[in-house]
Length: 219
Image (cartoon, rainbow, N blue to C red; front, side, top):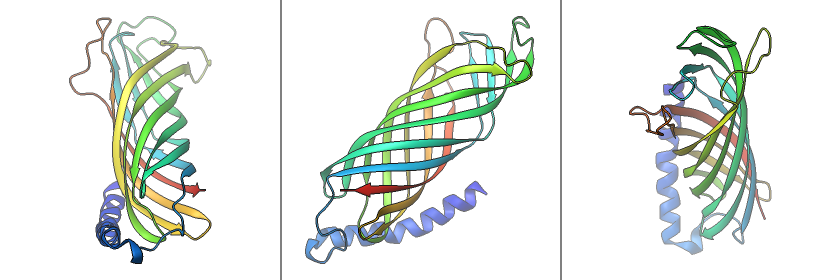
């Protein structure tokens, strides 16, 4: 399913990005807003694949299942259709929590949930009326917190931890005159999480794959 979505996005993005580049060379014929918006606000929903994190600091493994993220963004135009901004996303994900030492509230393995919060700086390109390609680079932090076991709702370690994260992605957007832009994109993110008390980064850091749809309004 995900491969089909990626293939569709790439198939539509390629000609749209080419058209956007062509119009950029001839500003007088470029479709778009009469005056480029200087500020954008956005709201999106991301569908996140499962991932597994081996956490050496708590001697546990977190096998996250699929989850849905709600994200809000604020962007400022820097040049043409390029913007820089800040995005904040939140999701609650199901997981299988496994303890290596067999002690604590979750001996060996149990099911539960945890909250995942992301705060990311963004660099985004692509825009205009009608169909067009978009791309985005992101960097910031991801917080894993509020781990709890499903049956008893007891808290599991850690209480909270923040890790540096970055992501890149692309997709398609459709500009609506006076109504902003709707978009769909695929993102691949990486969480650089320490695996022990010496803060050594994991050799194979976990990846976050997200399919995102949303709406932006410029003014």
